[in-house]
Image 1: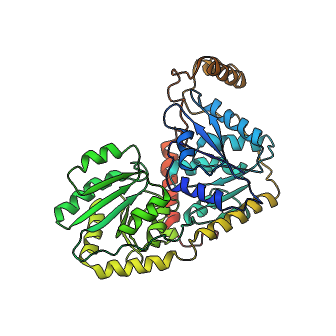
Image 2: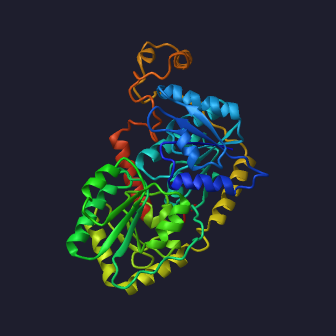
Image 3: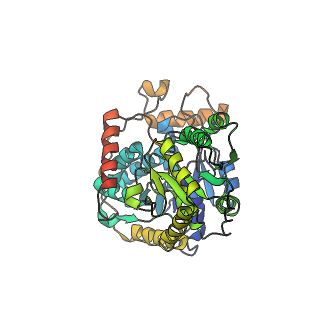
Length: 442
C-alpha cells in the first residue's frame, strides 16, 4: 500500500495518525510505503523522515515543476511501486494522479480518505469520487457528505481516528492556582482560526481570572501570535511529538482550546479527553454529527468566530471547579472504547481488505483536464504535455531547479482556484448535513 503525503508539516494530527497506523498494521499482510513530496521551500522529506524514522518512504520531487508535471511525477511513482492500494492524503496533485491512473485502467486501487471538511476539499472529492474504489471517513459528517456526493454505500466506511491510552495521569490542579489552558495543533488562520487566541487571551486578562496558556504547535501564524500575545501568560512550545504531548503537555492541562471553523474529526480532542482535560471548543462544522463534545455534558461549546464567548466558557470553569471535574470525568468515559487506537487499526485493516475483495469499479474515461496553476511559456505554446514534462525534468537534471516558475515549486493541499458560488453551496450543504439526524453510514 502506498500513501502520498505532504512534507511541509512533519508533526501534527494526520502525520501522527499515519505513523501509528503504519506501525500498527500486521506486517505479514501489509507493507505500507509513504511517498513524500519535495518542494523548493516548504516541503522537506528529510525533516519529515527525521520525525518519523520507522516509516518506509520514497520521494517525489516536484521542485520547479508546474501542476501538470507534478501530477505526472506522482503517476510515475505509483507505476514504479505498483501498490495494491494507493492512498493520497492532503496532496491535491496526488488525488488527480490517482484518478487518471484509474481512468487508464491502472492496477492500483484508489482509496480516498478525507482529513478535513473544508469546502475546497469536498469539491475536490466530488470530482474524484467516480474514480474511487473505496472511501474512508474519519468523521461522521465526512461519511454523510461522501455518500451525498455520490460514493456508493458499500464502498464507504466510517473509521473514527483513535488515540493511545494515557502514559501518565493528569497532575491535579491546585486550589487557587491559575487555570491551565492549552492549544494543540497547527498555527493556521484559515481552518484553525488561531488568531482568535488573541482576543480570547485579552478578554481573560481583562476579567482578572488567573490563567496560563500553553501552545503546542507551529505554523505560519506563530510570529503574529507571539507578537500579539507578548506580555500575557502564554508559552509557545513549538511542534510536539506524540510522546511529548502525552508526557509533558496533556498531563499538565485543565482545558483544551479549539477555535476551528471545521474539523473532519479532531484527534487532539480525543487525546485530551483521555487525560481528563476538558474541551472548550468552537461548534465547528462536524461537531454536531460526531457528538464527541456535547455542551454541558462532555465539554463546553461556543459559536465559531466568537472568542469572547470562549472566554466566558473558561471563566465559568474557573469559577466552578465542580463543573470542571464533572466534565473531565464524563469526557474520559465518552472516549473510552470507541476511540481506542486498537479499534482504529483493526477497522483500517478491514477496510483495506474490503478494498481488495470488492471488484474494481468501472470508471469513466477522464475528460481533458485544465490545470489550475500558471504553467509556463511552453504550456502556452501548445506543445504536447508529455514533451513539455520530459523537457522540464531534463533541464532540472542539467541546470538545477528553475526559479522562474512562480508558484510551481510547491504542492497545494487543494486546487487554488474555485468558483465562489460552488464554495458557498458546499459550505451550506455541510452545515445543513451536520445538523441533520442520522448515522454516518445511513
